[in-house]
Amino acid sequence: MKEVNNKYNRGRRSFLNWLLGTSLFFASGLSAYPVLRYLWPTDKVMGAGGSRIISIPLDDLPAGEVKFIRYKNRPALVINDFNAGIYALSAVCTHQECIVKWDEKRRELMCPCHGAIFDMFGHVKKSPATRDLEPIAVSVLKDQIIVGGI
Image 1 (cartoon, helix red, strand yellow):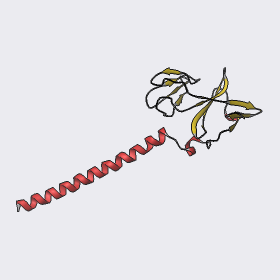
Image 2: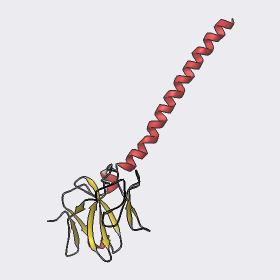
Image 3: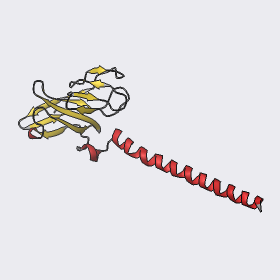
């Protein structure tokens, strides 16, 4: 009788171990999904569709504001600075290609992955990034901001 009970417990234990392992596998996959969506946002999240030339109404970007867009299917940002005027930068960190975030209080761009910091013009302030963010051509025509030139 004890031998039959032992077989039963081993079968039940292996089933429970399989169930636990499968649950952990799916739970880790489900928790990785939002992290990946955060690091590589889709066109729907970013807004514009990734054109070579993007037109933004001047009223949509008041002085002192930053707007994230898709330019050539990559994240970018357009900045309307009080002193420097309107300019655009790639929002892809030059270290490991994470998407940089705008810190409004410090007026800096920060990489959430490895801690690189860029000034508001895209120049590296803190490593691990060693190259500045790539600038993007911008012009203002009448009441439109044209990203990518004409």
